[in-house]
Length: 305
Image 1 (cartoon, rainbow, N blue to C red):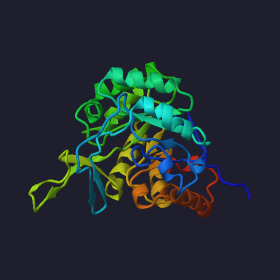
Image 2 (image 1 turned 180 degrees about the vertical axis):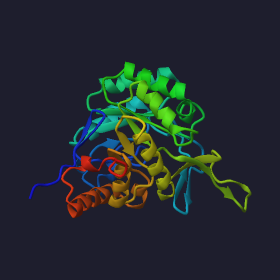
Image 3 (image 1 turned 120 degrees about the vertical axis):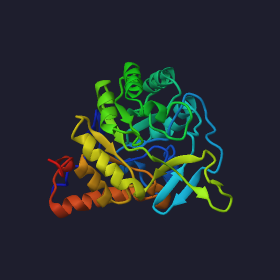
């Protein structure tokens, strides 16, 4: 029996299957190697990387909610030079493309990150973070302004030959306009969605729980919002979409693909189940077998075609 085709092309990023990790939920990879074979992933999207090392926000950084988590990490990371010299050599041992999520305070930051990572052997694509809600500079400030979002993508494209994936914020009035703006600026693909801005208050201290007051809500609570946004953007913008937002199972992933996602990223689920990416992949395969789907690409946007 011929095995179904799971390979997808995400704006020039060739993936053996549509399952990857969501940035910030998988570290740099070694953290999950004891639990899964990293070779089986379609791609690895690593933790957000900045030019300089960052300590992140003060605690409390994580709050559990009834259907997900609020986080306010603040892009804690060791900086791009550390990633290239220490983390990338390890990742290159695997037959899985590495996507680096980049974030900056200025256009010059994004340009320099694009240059250094393009020159580094082993990076397959750049995911441009213009949607982080937990930093005071850059992040969502770029992603909520159509002009600035496009300027960031245009700048990155000028300094790299790698596929560029624009990661957008749902915390905007009209995400379709932002998606159209970054598409015109040259983005090769979109990543939808980043977290929704939220907060929690301790009723005993009568103070916000998170050290940064507000944080990003992820997990199953935001899944219907993510599916709706992918549905809307996929029909308005001719770019492949990396869908994410509360995917916990293969069935969830299929829902995103039917809405218009070419590939999917697993995020919060990794904290609950370190084998979540494999469960999602196997769930997709079981769905395709059950319904006789020979090629995963047949399902992309099938709910609205």
